[in-house]
Length: 168
Image (cartoon, rainbow, N blue to C red):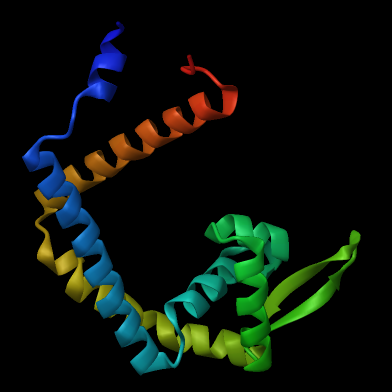
């Protein structure tokens, strides 16, 4: 048996499970608090903000719906339903894609752009208050290292799963 197999078969310790549960619970609570504050202060849901942020960061402030779905890691059907609701509220618009008659390009409207800009400063203040202010610079450095290790581990696992390596 290879060393990696032994590690993979070992059960998690009580401490590892407690830390995992704390991570899940803490991130859920942070998302709940930030989402409620965002909604209250701006009228945007966290999902609205996520879509508008992706559009804001895109070249030309527009994305094909398939690119938008990939950039925010949503299933296309979920995105389609959410975009319909955002379009009804006047936050985004869908335009025919010049390079693909089956596709649509999504961009924000003036209303959507204005709401996004008004929401950003208060949202960043809330992130600072509920997240950044809780950690010391040393804790931030440690968290950055931990997140990098997790991302590297997950990317390596995804690469193995895509290539079929590691299967018996």
